[in-house]
Structures are given as C-alpha cells and as structure tokens.
Length: 315
Figure 1 (cartoon, one colour):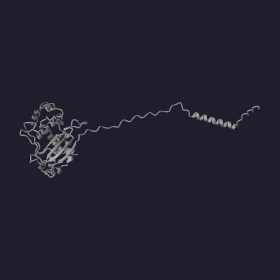
Figure 2 (cartoon, helix red, strand yellow):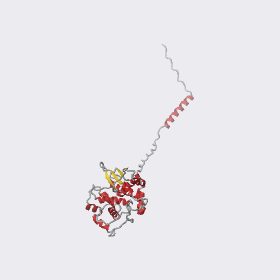
Figure 3 (cartoon, helix red, strand yellow):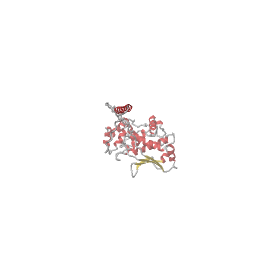
Figure 4 (cartoon, one colour):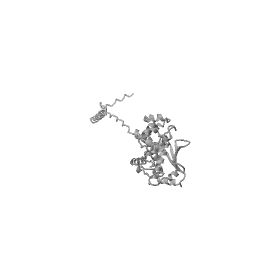
C-alpha cells in the first residue's frame, strides 16, 4: 500500500499579481458605491394645468327658410314678358320672405313662434283680379300664390321702376299670408289684409294711389287698415304690430279682450284717436294723386327710408 502523496506547498504569488488583484477589487468596489442612489429625492415637475376650453360662441339666431318655386302657365302672355324682364325671380321671392319675417317676427334659437311654412309656389297665370294665396289641400305648410298675368300686363311702364315695384309689392303682400297667424281662422279678414298691406307699407312698396281715409270701420282692410296699424306702431312703439300678429298665434280672436290686452283700449277708441289725426274731409298722405291703374311714383319718391329698407332686404 502506497502512502499518500503529500500535497504540494501553496504557490506563492508574486507581488505584481497581488497588486493587480487588489487594484481590480478596489475598482469594482468603488464603481458599485458610485451607482448607489443618493439620499435626496429628485425634484418632481408639477403637471401642467389643463387648458381652458376653446370659446365657441352660440350662432346668432336667424330666420327660417323654405323652398321657393315659380310656375308660369302661359309664357307667351304679355304679362309673363313683363314679369321675367322686370324681376330677378329667385332673388325677389327671397327678398319678399325676408321683408315679411323681419317686420312680423324677431328670430330665436327655436323660431317656434314662426309658422312652419315649408314651401311657397308662385303661380303666374291669366285670371281676373290681382292675386290670392291658398294653402295646399294636403298640407297647409305648403302655400301657393296665384298672381294674375292679366294684371301684370296692365301695370304702367312709366316711370321705369313702376312695374318692378308693383310686382314686388304684390309679392310681399301675398307672402305675408304665408307667414302670419290668424287666431285659428277667427281674426277679421280686414285685420288679416291690413297686416299684409302694413308690411308692404313698411317695405316701401306702397303704390302712389294709396290714401289715408276716414271710414266708419277700422277693419276695412288692405291699405285702409294698414295705415291704421302704422299709426298704432308709431304711437305704441316699434314692434306693436308684431305683437298683434303674435297674439293671434295661440288664441281665438275676441275683439274686446284682444285689443284691451295689447294696448289697454278698445279698438274703437284707438280708431277714433287715429281719425282725429286727419282732416274731416280725409287726406291723401301719399303725395301722388291716383293716376290710372297704379299711378307713377317711384321708390325714390317715397323717401330715403324706403330705399334703405329695400337695399337692406335685397342684399
């Protein structure tokens, strides 16, 4: 049995090797200590405040619109030639709508106080009379204005603007019937027609033969009642006739309660006061005497307010 071989003695490291190991160890230790976190925390940036919402103004309320159509049933008629020569149909129909709404209403966001008229069709055809307006048999929100070509053909051609102004005036009058309230069909016909001519008067489209006249009844209709309503507008403030129209929106017409509620007086009292502003024999406020069918006044002769209103509406 052989005796175990003795272990060799440990090798002695040279000084160079020991120094190298020691230096390397020190380097590692130092590196480790350098990467340790510091005791003071890093400053935290505050989160920015949310930006205020962008300002979005509410759109200004505007008037409702409707579809406008024109139908001519006899293009060979002399009246058709006059109509299409003297008018810009789409522009003048839109101007009539704008004139009516601007006098009878103030716009709102909902416009629920304005009738929901969806279309107006202007029908030019040979017939007696001047014009009339009817609702569609199936839907009263669709209206037809029937305008006589025979009448149009007879409007005097002088001065130059006479035919255009008369056509516009009739269209404004009839357009009122497409947008006004009538107290569930209980308002007097004279009041309905008087409001239509009041709007025509405010639009500066009154023909020169119109007169302020003394008559027994206030509701004689047309320009007779139109001038009376214009007097009320002057005495009780702008928008008075607008109030008359809007009062007919949700109530049936009761003459005593209706006028008393609006102006604190009976309509006969108002009419008597109006008549006192005229001479006993009556007066022709429009300075032009009646001349034939329509007379010869121009828009310019009716004064600067007329011209300004038309320019504003027709922009």
